[in-house]
Image (tube, rainbow, N blue to C red; front, side, top):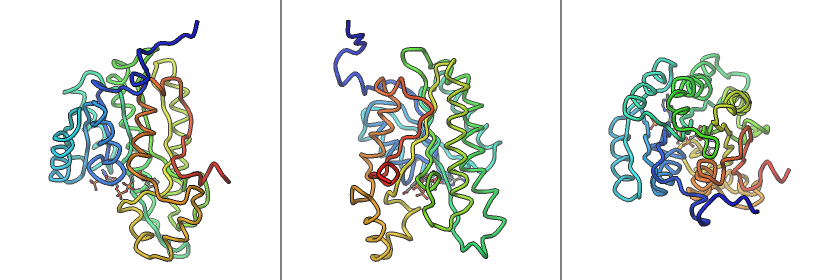
Length: 268
Ligand SMILES: NC(=O)c1ccc[n+]([C@@H]2O[C@H](COP(=O)([O-])OP(=O)(O)OC[C@H]3O[C@@H](n4cnc5c(N)ncnc54)[C@H](OP(=O)(O)O)[C@@H]3O)[C@@H](O)[C@H]2O)c1
């Protein structure tokens, strides 16, 4: 008796027909994740603050992927906006199988002049609205969940929330440590509902958020020297980790922090 419960190995990573929400899925890392999920056959709702970005990205992904992609406009700076987004999605989809809380913002400034105003906005987008989305999407997540194939919540954290990255991004680092811990707390509470909650900790990926580091050749080579695998992350790296966590292959994984960082955390 092997206990094998999949048809073949591709079935292990199959997410076709699942419904996913990826916040900030029109740009940057969220776009890489959304593209992977659409390519793998899921129906993916993406958000952007800009309507043109949301609709344009959705159209492009829908045209090339196996699944479907729908663009929604949302500024997730307030819990009210997160609740509105959850309502819009729930009106269309009674079941949500995968929620990826990806939208995030940062603020960098020297310690001596780090402003008070750099705290509430960063904490709102990176911690509070992900929590509100989980709370408001619970009925749809519960509808999609069963013991063999749980609903999945993937919260995008950061290596900067687990190690001192010396970025002078104080509220950002604290917010990422907070979302890692919140993921654990929610995982414990939601396990009995067959909903898994994991934090995905990216290292450095080529997006707008890291453009200031990549713009200077010296800074970029210093960074790459600190990555044991010797390169920045790619779309395949982050999409692959999300597909793993969202598929049958990841059904028994909850409450963890999965670093996708070329070994930055794991090899220390
Ligand atoms: N890039 C990296 O190396 C790296 C490393 C570790 C963790 N991360 C995390 O990955 C996630 C995505 O970051 P990124 O690298 O793609 O950064 P980015 O290029 O700056 O993109 C930020 C994303 O968040 C969305 N966003 C920002 N503020 C928002 C708001 N108020 N309401 C709604 N959406 C908002 C943006 O959407 P629109 O601009 O379309 O509205 C965009 O999709 C973040 O959680 C970040 O902390 C990134």
